[in-house]
Length: 475
Image (tube, rainbow, N blue to C red; front, top):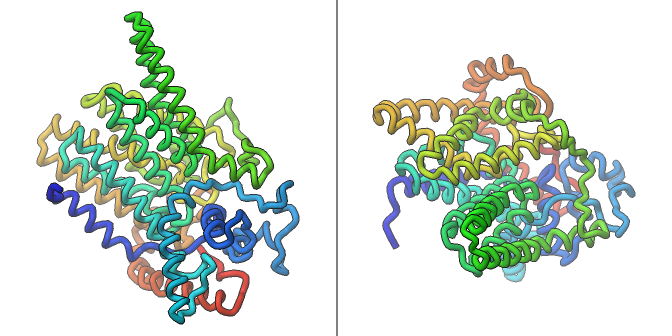
């Protein structure tokens, strides 16, 4: 095994140093995602009753009455609770939760007293660690991909920049029960394997790619936009075969595409089966929001003060611009990734809740983390080749540091409710807070955060012991 480079070592050290910031709680949308894992592990069926009753107040508000009974409207025609969230995160958490469950059962057998219900501290820690691990693996894979095209130093800079100056850390550490860090991992895995096998993909490799695509969709439906990569690649292949009248290879590619599609559907069966059980139909995803296909909110998605992609996390503007710089190294890849991004942007723009409701930045785009790392790395490398490398390095690291500090300050404001967690914000107030409020309150609130988190976990354990129904309100 080759010795890790200094940049690989630095990434690993950074990951370990950030682990104390993981926040082992389940709240908001995360209740729905985590319920799939907990119900199957503990109750061996899709019964989400205990998850709804133990959820945070904002989640329970329209689902549970003051007396602690689930509202009748929450039940579907099949008698199950309405859980429209994806099952993929539960699949990825499974190895971590199984180990935690085995440890709890062993501890109880030795005379310990930890609730083996999926809600006690070992389970929540396992879930949070799993999310942090998948978030880091998304970054690691992105870094490895980027350094194939540019100098390793620029791949490292881009990885660190996207890691700490985008929305990723919120959903990698602070809201680990949500699906976004896992979606970034699934996309990174799919992109990496597609790139690795792009030249001559065998039958078995098409099957593996289909399996990775199905898992990616299990985790986050809209990442189906990444399937444009093998589609565009295959269309280019058909075009070449038609020009050269190569009927045999074209037919063989078609059969490989069919095998890819079949494998994709098979891997998507966990989602389809879960929806059949809950809603009585394989194709009822449970969402009721509208899609406006003729009037996508492109500008709002990108620049609105209500969780605009570039206005909240400006480093992503440079990352997207870098996709065009990637043409210098791989014109086809740059074109395909630009098309994927535009298609993804179109889909989000058509969605009724394009702003993500309660969201830090536009959380939907966390899934595209690998594209952003590749784009940012290519942009910096392009500048380095056009100007003095030393000056570019100084400027690039300085600009990245500024964007990271800005992002961390904005994250602090969002978490402390100095700015609204949903709806538009005042950039004037946000800028004032960044300069005046955040420096004063930051250090104190960081200490308070760790103390409050510890107390919250203690209250959760006490609740489990005494049989209380709901944890304290969160965020």
